[in-house]
Length: 229
Ligand code: DC
Image (tube, rainbow, N blue to C red; front, top):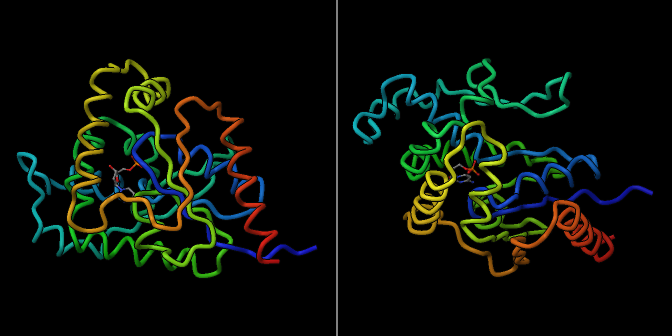
């Protein structure tokens, strides 16, 4: 039987395991998965590579001029089967995950015209539903009409430990500081700050295994499908 296709929005703090669960659900149910954070990271990388961040200040006017030249796409690597982020046709998956980018991404993601451009692209990607997207403002700004909204939290230390496990030569205290700084900026920025949508379901996964959170999310998806079919 054909299931109705829905929109699934997953928001939460940085490194709280959103993408892991979002990706796995998308794989299991055959939906597109979009990592919206990767898009903000790609714009940040573009800024760093083009001298558009000087002394921690984004050169707004210069960035506004070139914003239309920044094309972000995703493609699956046939060897690893993993989705990778492309900036103007070049794979930047590794570069966008470095601390250099993490340290500046909050500066770029608080800029109004950057958000407008990326939100428009994200909405276009979700036009046909059948999409799982994760980020900070997916439930509140990108897809406020999403049938399933999840708000994920976990303690900063647990999140730093998880991110450190994914990186080479990681200093866990540095990572925790970066996470705390980004939490601060994500919650307090003026445009589309991170907040739980009224109709989002909250998940604190600090003490959950990946398998447990995958099962939890699939159960929430199934509840929505059973309700609307
Ligand atoms: O999920 P992430 O840590 O890779 O996201 C990187 C940054 O991008 C994060 O610090 C906040 C920003 N972001 C955002 O402002 N809105 C989104 N929808 C996704 C990410």
